[in-house]
Image 1 (cartoon, one colour):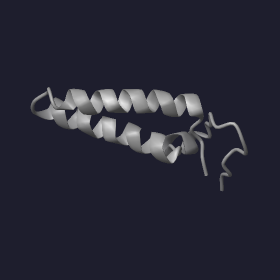
Image 2: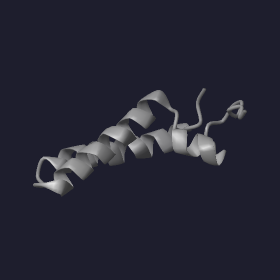
Image 3: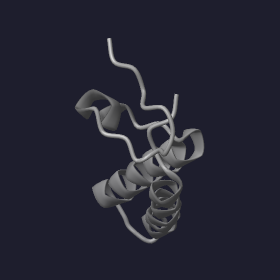
Image 4: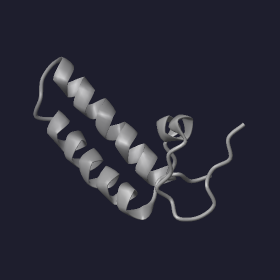
Amino acid sequence: MKNVGVTDARIRWILGLSLFVFSFFAEGAPHWFLLGAGVVLLATAFVRFCPIWFGLRISTHRGPHPKHP
C-alpha cells in the first residue's frame, strides 16, 4: 500500500539525505534529532508509505488510494 507519490518521495530523499549528512556536523541533542528525522524521511521515501499521512487520509500517490478501516 503506497500513499507517497513520486515527487513527494524525491523531496523526502533530498531532505532525508541532507538531514542525515548535516547530523554528523551537529553535536548533542541536535545530532540525534537530525539523524532520526533523516532516517525517517529516507525510510518513508524508500517504502513509499507514511503512517502519519495514512492516519490523516492523505495520499500523493497516483493510483488506488489506501483503504481505511
